[in-house]
Length: 111
Image (cartoon, rainbow, N blue to C red; front, side, top):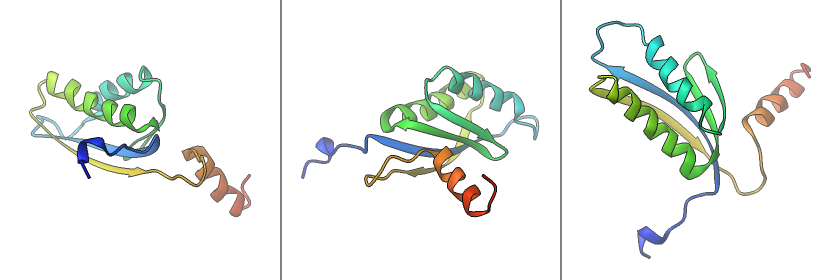
């Protein structure tokens, strides 16, 4: 099988955290704000949380936005960036990250 012809899943959820390395300050809030500005214009469904951001949408677009986030920070002078990325996809049904949280709240009696 030719690996260049294998398709990717059509939809995914990705939780990611960009980690700028070698900055002059332990604070990364300005870098996070830059990434959030990008995400807000991406057209993807997203939620920022204390340890990163969850994106939801077409596989290729989700991964493109994560790469663009790296690029934006590199353009700001961040020489090195590590990312933790957890990606999920499924084919049995459509399920958003909101659906997952809602289901757990239902089980906890917090609807």
